[in-house]
Length: 239
Ligand code: GLP
Image (cartoon, rainbow, N blue to C red; front, side, top):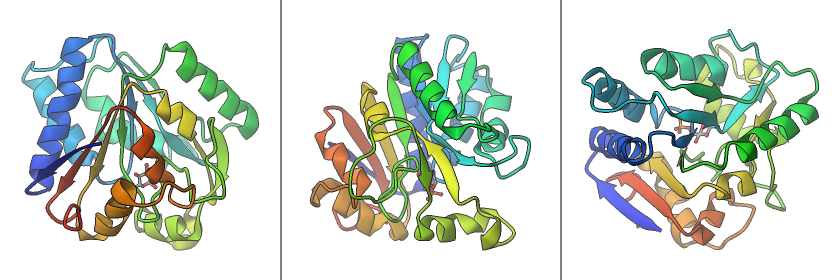
């Protein structure tokens, strides 16, 4: 694991955007794996600025998002579909975008279909990740095994609580989601995980140096051959 410690969230966002832009410059037809959550928002903003200045061109890029709530209305402002359009896709020229369908009537079929789409794309070149306070990546929650493929998941009580800040009431947070699995994520040639703020310090320490266990899904990243972690001073304070 390569760890890059930076001063603050702004520098973290700039660094992450530079790495994504460099990937796209090197391979204009890159397949990018993208993430939601508040952490990558600054990187998306920076990429939008770079795009507007003509410093990056996403015309050949295909993007696959990690996860989506289920059930959720795509057009509703709490779906990850809406989030990605608002925060990134509506402002740049990414050629093709994929997000698991939170409206799918048959969630098992949607998981299978999404997994297939990722594989048929030829595989993700650079996967962006955030991390949940409980160590989840995407929506791979602490469990007794590492789920391999894209799957339907019951969200952890702690995730529902943490994500309630985006909803009017905690009871409005969907109880389930569709997420890429660990193997889906591991097929990515490169992974870049971002973490900011003191609240992430403990899970970052466990991810980097703790026991590899499905109880802390992010710990499996210790086994991937090309992982870059960018942390600000607060999130990296226990490293
Ligand atoms: C959600 C997403 C994750 C994300 C996590 C952390 O649960 N499914 O992909 O990493 O939130 O969010 P934040 O960046 O807001 O701390």
